[in-house]
Image 1 (tube, rainbow, N blue to C red):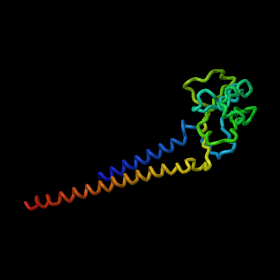
Image 2: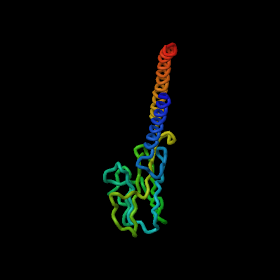
Image 3: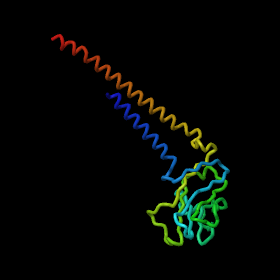
Image 4: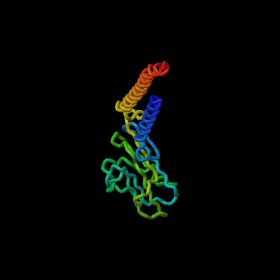
Length: 198
């Protein structure tokens, strides 16, 4: 019974570990995940829920302190607020932003572009500043890798190693539990014989 309990805990541990690894992929509960190879152009999708004119559009990365990936206000791109790494590399997918389309195209991506991008939209109807507890309209987790299907590359095998070690530990616990149970049973047999003889 102890061996089965150990096995159950081991399986639960592996499931928790696996879910934690999956959670690393989609940071900050991103709405979308996009994978790309270096040098490609990547659309970052964002659609405002209203068809009102967009007066301010911010694409940001939480890692960037004050600068933006893309900052659009008063019908023009404002590069003075844009992080230098993104200047000349980001443009509106639809310059007219019809039907609330606030998507942008990130050009010539590289591995440093991997991360979460958040889209913030203010329209002529809202005309207010972003509140501290407000959520972005959209967020995209971008993974740029030579092999986008396995972004961890050789490092991706680390998780496989962790899982194998966990399986060995769980297997060892099960075997140890069975050995202890068998030894107890063997020790109790002579005592039962003595009691039966009396």
